[in-house]
Image 1 (cartoon, one colour):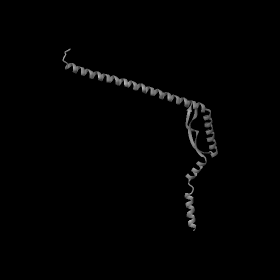
Image 2 (cartoon, rainbow, N blue to C red):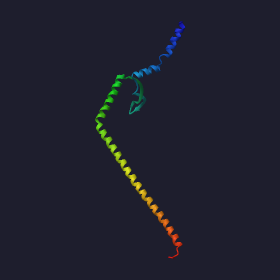
Image 3 (cartoon, one colour):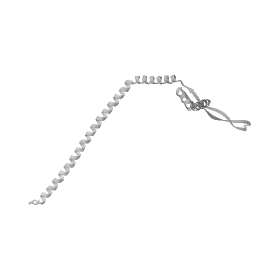
Image 4 (cartoon, rainbow, N blue to C red):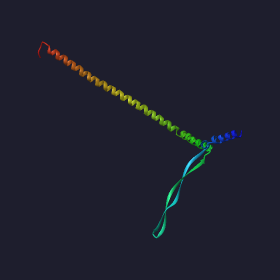
Length: 158
């Protein structure tokens, strides 16, 4: 019986609370991971006898460190609400000008559509005139052939 209890306890300790699960719970509650960088001056080189003095040359080295910050849910909600309220206020302030812009845009679109329709009508009319000239040429050519044929077989010489 003790063996079964020990096995059960060991299995429970091994598989019940993983680090990933605990980390996910903390992130859900508001923990935020940030990386902060610090600069440290480190002596790099000792140079002797520069203008009669010993000198140290320092180099800056960047040391990153992971910082865990806790941001409560109420603070996140408050920030989101404040942001949304500011958006609502801006929408209220600019509602009239936005409506006027939309109306002007719609009017310009309608005018552009009317202009396009008029341009299409002009193109159609010019095409009809182009076809009429072609038909006149064909009819004139046919009449010319007929008259040539008639003169060829006429009794009177011209």
